Image 1 (cartoon, rainbow, N blue to C red):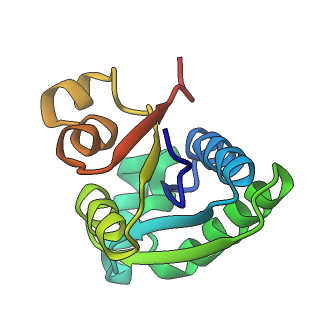
Image 2: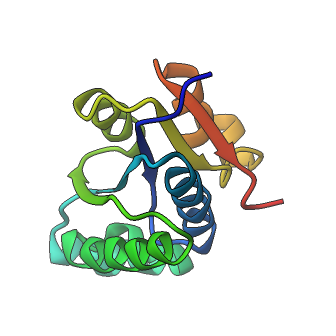
Amino acid sequence: MSAYRTIVVGTDGSDSSYKAVEKAASLAGDEGAQLVIACAYYPTDERDVGAAADALKDDAYQVRGSAPTNDILRTAREKAHAVGATNIVERSIVGAPVDSLLQLVVDVDADLLVIGNRGLNSLTGRLLGSVPSDVARKSRSDVLIVHTVR
């Protein structure tokens, strides 16, 4: 098996997703690969943010536009660097996480996509689909699903 040259990992700023970042970064460091850390977001109207934040509670960070995305990516870069990744690229992407990550894999010609398992075994994930299961089903590259939530 040849070494991975480019690894993409998605993060949404959750503790679970940062564990996936650390795993991807460790692999990238070991392989001498480029690590592309991605965070997908939707631009939001400020009037909608308050209502969405009330409904989402702890997951409200996902609806706050691009400003938190920059903070999420900076934190992810720090975590990635701490575990050995040296060639790190940050990408904020407007759009749905699954489609955005899959397109990014194509755009950067990645060999591996790393994602956390959050939502994989939830009721919502079983009914509506989850990022990990959708990515694994649709990706044309290797996919590593990191067990970040048990």
